[in-house]
Image (cartoon, rainbow, N blue to C red; front, side, top):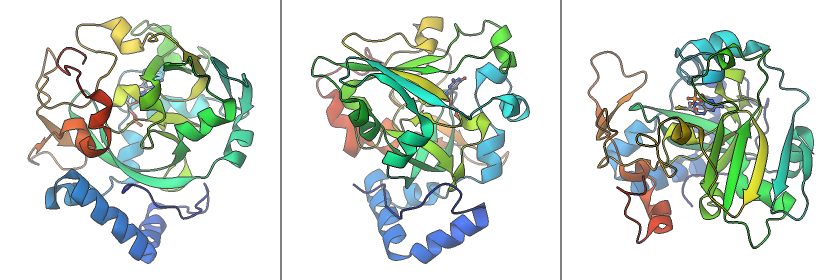
Length: 303
Ligand code: MTE
């Protein structure tokens, strides 16, 4: 698979963006290979240029995390008060070993990797983010998924005293999301713990958030405290809020417009006021890997 390289990198090994970029240059061969793979994957030179990661500043100051407010700068301003240590994730439902998994115990058993993924919000802006994390499939293996499981449900922490945005019922709290099991165990599906090799900032979903790069950003639920294996499709926050506008699948699809705007193009954050919009890619450019998951489905109906 083209999008990963293993460098044994651990959080805190790299402390700033410049160092991280230098380190990537030093990686030479393997990073070069990963990028060459990406270019092939997503259609040549344009895709390669588009994969220059956004800056730390851009990634951590323009956020959606409604538990801390609906403005793009609210999360960076308000999320500092979220307690992320200690942290544990309850894994329950159709698993052999249900329980509360302490974040440190999870980390000790996971192999962290860097992955540079495109990130496309349903609001038609995009970034490129160098995540640190591990595959969700490996985390689910810790708990042992039972054969009857078909879906995975996720839940964000809910602490009204630390999350000022939850005083407003813009969404039905806690924030919940879900994936089909085959989507959840796909090798592209990541649990992220960092960006640029540093721990995730609270506004980006510390200490642990989902990243599903071929789906609109709202599927990538932040600050996860519970993962439940089920045999029926779980409710998801934006679908509950407005089922006509936000489906369960929410695969990036330039051909299916949001009822209020086109999804055919996107505004790359950091491109400047007069930058040309870029065409949106089917499955956000990851079609070669994931299109098979949806064979035979009408993606305009199952959006
Ligand atoms: N998770 C929670 N718990 N609450 C949220 O409001 N917003 C979603 C997603 N995960 C959100 C969330 C949306 S709409 C997007 S686009 C991404 O987080 C934004 O992630 P970022 O701020 O790290 O770019």
